[in-house]
Length: 115
Length: 113
Image (tube, rainbow over all chains, first blue to last red; front, side):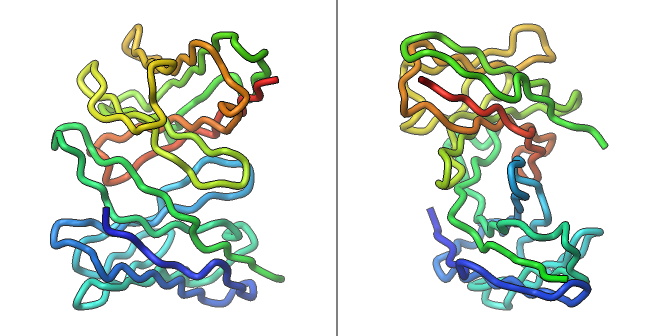
């Protein structure tokens, strides 16, 4: 499986933008880039995913480098509720294409948001 | 917003006992998964389930584990003879689109004593 590298932790002030980086230099042409987050004592939560083009949704934006070897999750205005571990994951295609993709979680980036 | 519901939220069991963890996935989802997270460690994939059969499983998912979708709404994980090292948070997840976006439940904390 292609691997991702993220900083262990980052800190942000409330109401400021946050840019969470992810390196994935061994990404294959068919790998999707997924971002999930895990708030304390909760299950992971889908944030966003993309393949080649930048993506926006109500939670965040995903900026993907032209060579796809890195990406950045952008939270436009951090709130205290955004304090979580953020995981950048490449889709691990399973042997049976009808079975969906298992997610290979790493250690992620622990985001601290201060008032 | 639709949710994946897991019960119980916390279960304590004695080593060697069987446990069944229950999940109700989102109703129009077709793909179902179990993951676990040992305290302080990474979230680990256990098994995926599609079209009423296991489609993929990890090395963790050995013969003591089994999954079932008994009635079209519930999705269960059974651990036949629990060990101390099975203590973890177990997360159920479901997906409509084959894994492009999962919805996870809040988890069941399993404590084996």
